[in-house]
Length: 351
Image (cartoon, rainbow, N blue to C red; front, side):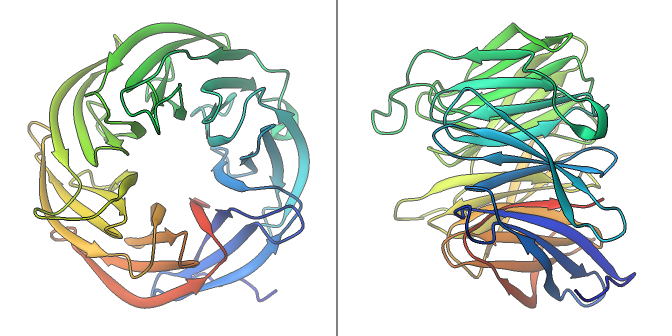
């Protein structure tokens, strides 16, 4: 393993891999040049598709997206970033596709896509997980008979206050807010999205007053006002993720707000693009500015790394692609570098 230089930022990449092939990759990005490389990798996990680091950076939580889902806990060596398996817990659900950690590091959340349920685990010593403190199974369906035949909890994450956990259920066209009460999930509010929208992922703006949801099935973003004290979302805007006149099938995937809070990005599978929106700093509303090719197929997940570089995981072309973000207007410019990886689906920066 080549030593990591001071110019390099580390990130882990999750993939769709079988347990007998490399599935979790530690990668390095040179913030000066944009060049990426694989530092090391590990096997032993079926479909380690979604990853989340603990706030202190010492533990990596991995969703094993299988019929009998698990969350695995790895201790990260601070000096080498090598991973050591510490714990694994079943999620009592099928196809967990999302995992997140509370800001205080005390709770780990996971969502089971196929079975439509969500979980909470308390965090113990060395980042290990205690016995599941909450398990909630959703019921119902949506209007899209192929994709919404039942509940599909696609993401769960704590709100900025840490009082609530917010779930996007693609199958129900609902955003469900739970109160987090000593590790239990208590239903607080249920908010309907447009029929057939398919809410997938949600991000909060750095000011905590606005939130944005990417809707997978109708290729839109919904902008919300967020009342942190009341755990309440108010819809402000629905806007397409696709360029005008787009033809062909496709689904939206991921969504990120830039650290400066002026730009929002979303990925389109099928169109294979990242759309840039400018965020109105008074209202939180979005204006679509530009669509940039991801130079690959099926951009699943992407993330913004230190140095203002956006890295896209192109699942079906087996590569990561880097783009420099303009500080002035947020536009993306391919920095000339790609990294070949098998079926990449998630990027988790080591901050």
